[in-house]
Image (cartoon, rainbow, N blue to C red; front, side, top):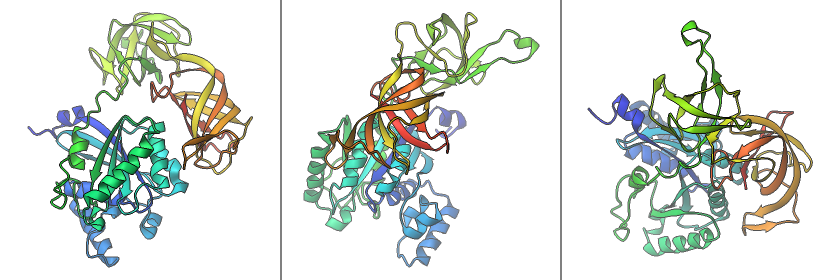
Amino acid sequence: MSDFSKDGYMNMELLRFTTAGSVDDGKSTLIGRLLYDSKQIFEDQLEAIEQRSHQRGFEHIDLSLLTDGLKAEREQGITIDVAYRYFATPKRKFIIADTPGHIQYTRNMVTGASTANVALILVDARKGVLEQTIRHSFIASLLQIPHLIICINKMDLVDYSEEVFNKVVEEFKHVSSKLDIKDVHFLPISALKGDNVVDKSQNMPWYQGATLMYLLDNIHISSDENHIDCRFPVQYVIRPQQTEYHDYRGYAGRIVSGIYKPGDKVKILPSGESAIIKTVELFGQNIEEAYAPMSVTMTLDRDVDISRGDMIVRENNSPKIEQELDVMICWMNVNKLQLGGKYAIRHTIKDARCVIKDIRYKIDINTLHRNENDKEIGMNDIARINIKTTVPLYFDSYRKNRYTGSVILIDEATNETVAAGMIV
């Protein structure tokens, strides 16, 4: 039976990746090429984009049309919103977040990148590293995306020059030396022609590395999850109103980090009560262990007062429990951040309110320096702030745990998400 059997597909490793880069660097074309060359496009989709390409007078198929789904995107030839695409190889399942390159849509890039294992950052070989390249690399570093693949695109327009490729690599290395980036790969490609995307390029014999598809299929992501710090925010308490399950009390949610097994001694926050895990259930079946990012139901050996928003952790490994937090934020709203302003805050699945106590500094994206004098935080700005919440939150630093270390701020009047934050 093939790897695409139902059970095989369900058990395949999932890799999430995002694309970023400046305007017209070819992000949508690259994803289109990836899907086209790996034979992930349905015939009717192919016919539709062939027809639209001919209507525009193109001699070739415009593969960017596969991801630019909004009418305004197709008309302007740009990406505005985050477009998600799904595909699979015999080895892995993939979720792609195609994000915009325009500076005014930086917030969309943050949205698409927030859960990514890998960021593909496209650089036009002719232009080299631009301000948006630095901005997106900084955001990738801030969001602690474990792996970066720098795709130096449009190599066909520089005669597949090794010298040009090496120059861009050196430019990027100069920028990345100031950032917290762990794993970087450099790849010379032509998304338009297909060089080194799925198939090895015949035009760049000097490049002996892997193709993009090979990298995505084989990059090591199993250690990206935090399997040490056990964090299980309770999303729902299950109490079936049936005679046969009269005493059943299950706690459902998604494990955001760590490994849980029946027999483990755990602590419940905020009460501090201790208990032992009786069962861990997945789809109604008892399992021997569960780990991030599985969604499971746990039962305990004793009745403890647990409600939505509480957290089940290990006895000797607790998160911080505080009301004052230092947070790096990306501001996403046209209305500026208000010092002393009150906002709703969501952390894991816990809702509270907070007040902005201090604006420490704003990041100058061009130089990556901290500006402590500029306290005006507007759309797409990145800043470090101090907040106080109405109730204690159970959190880790974002560097330690991407899930318990992240928050969003919400304007209570409009219900709009105004900022994404990483707890320092």
